[in-house]
Length: 481
Image (cartoon, rainbow, N blue to C red; front, side, top):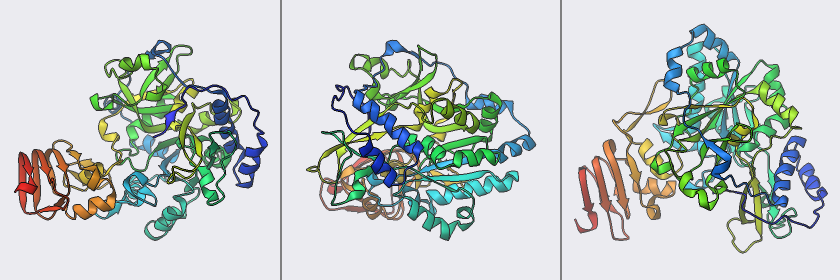
């Protein structure tokens, strides 16, 4: 996982900037992309720590809530007009490598034979049909996901692929040699000299590609951005109406932190200028860790569901010289991430949510946890494929069970998708499941039901199959059964 820039002494050797500009220009990177990289690189060389002590911020205790906004309402005609001014952008640059995938994560089957991309496409079409409004659709692909995604769309949703500006391609970022701070080199596989710049690249990508100007020229004012693996992040018309009515340039959806979220980042307000900001764990000094983890003090976390006024974004970029001053995320790896003996490098990244501090009039709204349902692990996928969730007529995936099941599968046997699918050819019924913990290789076949809190253990190396059986509030050692 990427971490914020750690304390470091400024680098005193003068690095010829031309080494980077020549490399980026040769690769076809726009001026906006190069300027954004330069800002990140200058933070790296200067040894910027990014640390934000509690003394410099104020907790955010109260925010508007989505359920309150729904009560305000808006007539259907007004909403249809708003949709004509709106684009939905899905971040689709991830490969899902942590789950063992080697192509776009959005092409993974989620439920009923549908992939993330199928469900997203069908949601867009449903919204258009229901409201008679051609809301725009954009996928932000990376150089790793572009081809796979477009190939899939051409066979499954060719009508969307044929639309104007349906793809925004994420920039590449130079890996930086950790010893010399020069461009990293790896002649055996030159592609490995590059890395993704993080989803904060959305802003230079929009600007440098010309898409920002084209969207504004086409009458698009509002942009809703979310991750393609977050099936809860649908285009909510109440939020859209509120955002338009507020006149804000930037709006972040946040959820209330729970005990399981205390290690993650939170929303805060900077004392120096009163602006909202995000503080991640690596930005917190050691002495403030207790306050950082106090969920009654710092109550909200970023869902990465964002609303951006494109005209305000354009103005803000112009004022800041074409680059939003986003905090640097410094990720230290090896130039070949699969070979620890290769040279150490820095990957310089930014996060799109941190742009909240770049807008004078940014806001946040508290949304239900259902709008934050990312599929990050096979535990998440296992639950989604069960009867605890269902696909609606709008092609959204919602909880069907009384409560979401908590799934903890043994990482040694279920971490990768192909492992999970091999051991779970049939997902058990989880409709009445509170929690399921699996230790060791357990193979789920037809007719299995889980009710209440269940722990299944197999202490042997060989998978134990279970079929046509219901487990309820029990702990069972299957290897002894």
